[in-house]
Amino acid sequence: MTVSVTSSGSLPLFISTSALLNHWQGHRRLTRRVIDVFPEDQLFSFSIGSMRPFGAMALEMIGMVEPMVRGILTSDWNRIDLPPVLAKRDVLRMWDESTATLDRLWPQIPRERFQETMTAFGRWPGKVHDLILYAIDNEVHHRGQGFVYLRALGVEPPAFYARE
Image 1 (tube, helix red, strand yellow):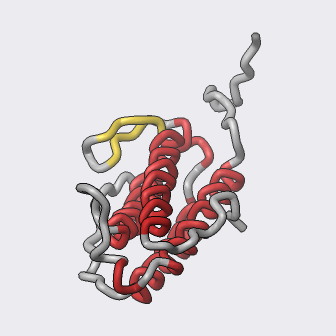
Image 2 (tube, one colour; image 1 turned 180 degrees about the vertical axis):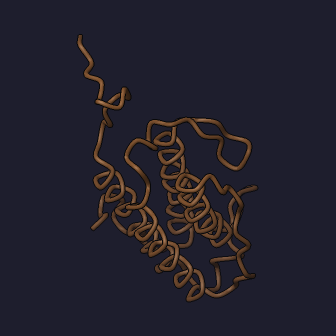
C-alpha cells in the first residue's frame, strides 16, 4: 500500500476539517435536544448509581469546547470558569454560546495543525485530530448517560441518529 504525503511532508487528513466540524456539530445538535427534553427539576438532581446528574455532565461538555478549540488554535490551554448554573435555560444558552464559539474559532485553525502533537491542558498529549475526537467521544458518552437517565425518568429521548 502506498500512502501519499502532502507537500508539507505531513500525511493527508482522513476527513476534511469542515466535514469534521459538521460531524461534531451534528452531535452537538443532538446533545442540545437531550438537554432540552430533560425535566427541569431533574437536570441537576437525578442520578443513577454514583454517576453525576446530567446537568453537571452538560456543563463539563460546555466547559470543554472553547478551551479545546482555543488551545488547538493558540496553544493557550487555560480552562474557562463557568458560572454556577441551576436552570435549564441557562445551560441551553451556554450551550448555544459554546457552539457559536466553536463555529467562530474552527475556521481559524490551520489545516496542518490537525496533524501536530499537542498536550491538552498540560496533561494529555496527542495528535490534534485525536484530541478533537476525544472531545466528541466524551460528548457521545455523556449523552448516552443522559439517554439512560431520560428513560429511567419515563421520558423518550430524541432519536440517537437524528443529528440535523
